[in-house]
Amino acid sequence: MFRSYLRLALFALGLLVGVQVPGFIDDYSKRVEAHRIESEQGLKGFRETAKRFFKGDLVALVGHYQASADPVMRSDAQSLGTLVERSAFLERESKAMQGPWYGQVWHLATAADHELMEETLTAYRYQVLLAPEAIAWGIACAMLLAWLLESLALLVGMLFGAGRSQKVQQRHWR
Image (tube, rainbow, N blue to C red):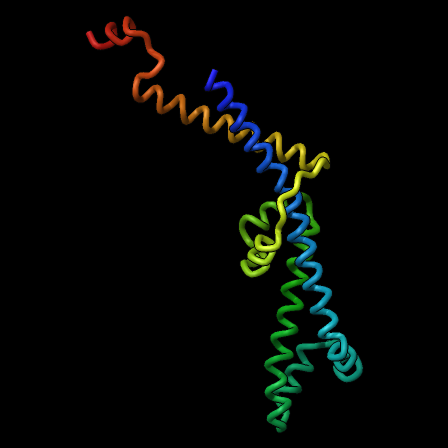
C-alpha cells in the first residue's frame, strides 16, 4: 500500500515539475525579447547615423569612431561596439526561441545565455498552466520520473535479493 502511495506521490511530483517547463520557456523567451527591444532602442540613434553616412553599416560606424583622432570618439567606439555585439547576440537568441518547442528546449539546455537564464530563474514564479503543452509536459515528466525511480528501486531490490522467497533463495545457493 505504501508503495502505491509513493508511486502516486512521485507521479504527482513529476507532473508538477513537468508543467513548469512551458512556463519557463515562455518567460525566458519574453525576457530575451524585452532585452532585444531595449537594445534596439539604445542603438536607434546610431542606426540612423549609420544609415545616413555608412549605408546602415553599424560596424563601419564603429570603425569610423575608432579611427577618429578625437579620444572621446575612440572611447565611445568601444561602448558602441559592445552595444552592436549585444544587439546581434540578442537577435540570434530571439530567433532561437522562435523555433519549434524541441528546438527551444534544446537551446535552453545547451546554449542559453547564462546571464539571461539566471535572470529568468530569479524572477520565475511557479505556475500551473492548463495549456495543452503544459499538460503534455507534465504527464511526460511524471511518467518518466515514475518509471526511472521504479526501475531504480527494482534494480536495487534485485541486487539485495528483495522480493525473492526463501525457497528460491535456498535453491540458488545450493
